[in-house]
Image 1 (cartoon, rainbow, N blue to C red):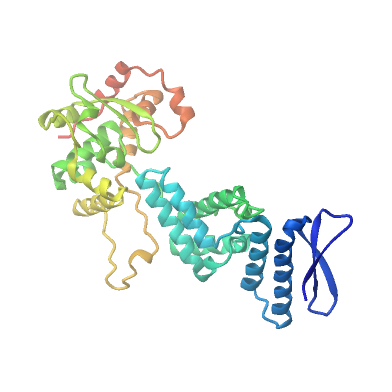
Image 2: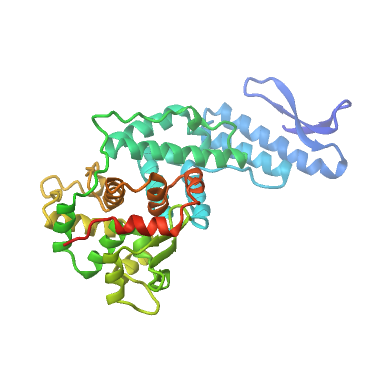
Amino acid sequence: MASIRKHPRSPFWFACYTLPDGRQTQRSTKIENKQANASRAMEVAIQYEKIVKVARAGRMGENQARSAIAAIYEIVNGEPLPGATIREYFQQWLGEKKKELSGGAYVSYRAKVKAVLDVLGRRADADLTHLDRKTILDVRDSLVDLKSVSTSNYCVKLVRAILRAAKHDGLIDTNEADGVAAIKIAAIDRVDKMPFTMPQVKALMAQADDEWRGMMLCALYAGMRLGDISMLQWGDINLSARRIEVKTRKTGRRINVPLAQPLYDYFSARQADDGPVFLRAHTVVEREGRTGNLSNKFKRLMARAGLIEMPKNKGGKKGRSAKRVFNPLTFHSFRHTATTLFKEAGVPHAVVMDIIGHDSDAVSRAYTHVGDDAKKDAVNMLPILE
């Protein structure tokens, strides 16, 4: 029967009990050996004895052991044992990130977390400490087959960030994802984004409605991203100064882009006091928090213009689980087109980067000296769509 005793050379109560093989033993409870703490120390001794009984019966599984340890931890510390399953902690981390991220970034994170948990399956319900290097490698390699190399590498980075937070929270001792390298994308498998040619741009314009024409003009003549274009407000457009002044969603960088004549003409003909410039696109992104739906709509526009073929899923019906097929032409290609046109016109690299905007803070800071006149001259060098 379990009991407790004081040790002459220890400040803690000791629990006395019998091991499964019949040997008597004692173990410190880590509870200070004052009389007021005797009942708590006895509870710990009883828990040790329960563990022994379960082990003697051959029923000591992981869940039973973890439950017993958790009970002892709570008796000693007065609070539950910190811990979580892989699924629980990943969802908890995601919930915290929702407060910090933009809608589009959060949706992307959520999709990646779901992809990792889907690959783990029932393993995701194991304790977080079970997410070892071998398991993460398995997730990485499975995602290459299911999705793509880039998606797989992104998911590993995300797992690494989540485990870094778990280590900070004291739930794990080692970030096992630190030892998992990214998979190199072979040159033959890499799909580089291509710029649109001017004939292709004209083919797109011929198939587009008025809103898509305006959005494509913003991308072509101002080098703007689809997300920034969709959220563009009339207050961001200064027609008297002939420029767009807006803070980019991706980098948080403020851009000041002079209006090329085609873009100025488009805005002048539709000028409004306030509100979104492109109402339908704005509504989609506001509702969904991302531009994925708009990208799909643009893909269908490219198909109507004869630039790509839409994938056919009628036979296999693979749906969303199918491995994605990447195309070198996307809406982002307009940024490559704009960069190409600027360079072909002989615009200095620093001016091009200031107009297009660059993801690197270091590069952006280096180009802060570019003046408005240089940028106006640059946009006036771009070809006019006929």
